[in-house]
Amino acid sequence: MIVFENVTKTYDPDVVGLQDFTCHIGKGEFVFLVGASGSGKSTLIKLVLKELEPTEGRILVAGRNLGTLPQRKVPLLRRNIGCVFQDFKLLPNKTVYENVAYALEVVGEPRRMIRRKVPEILNLVGLGEKTNSLPHEISGGEQQRVSVARAFVNHPPLLLADEPTGNIDPETAVGIMQLLVRINRTGTTVVIATHDREMVNRMRRRVLQLDAGRLVRDERRGSYDQTPDDLEEGV
Image (cartoon, rainbow, N blue to C red; front, side, top):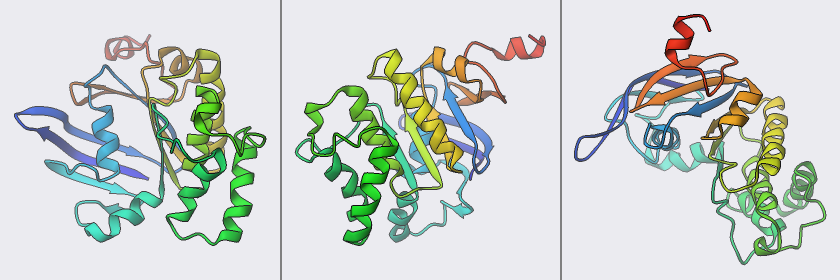
């Protein structure tokens, strides 16, 4: 689903976002990106979305070489990638239903399909009774569920989440992560950038750890707390 080959991203003046990064993420995987602030997690996500261009190296998403992808085809790329962010990015003057429907409207989905798909996805995320609520009328956890619903309503093959539990309480965060697991089980590849140490350790999925733009660990069923030294010692 995602291939990075010797990718370096340098910001002016000489600030490294990623350094000689190579990694393959297969279809249907569930992967955590971990590392300190500034380690390169957000840079990686922006490169996948083609919001940034690499300084060196090659990136493929679903078999498409982003380096040769014409600018006119970038919107089509992004339509096939669901995105969930820490700050929800909901439209404040639109209802829960309208926020999710908007993701379908912008890709030209017929109205009859919108009327069918939106209630289905809102029921999936547990918000079937909140369709007419405005974002400020629901909790932070519910707002994040709307964000997840909007990202998944098109059933994209890839879903990226940047700190999806950063602004919600731990108990609610568990529910959001369980929801992302359910989405992953439908076949969608899920990549989550997070500082949530407890959640990563609890779930024991693949962990990619970044440090100063470099990949320092790629561990199947890994934890946030393991270090490269631990792995070498067999801990």
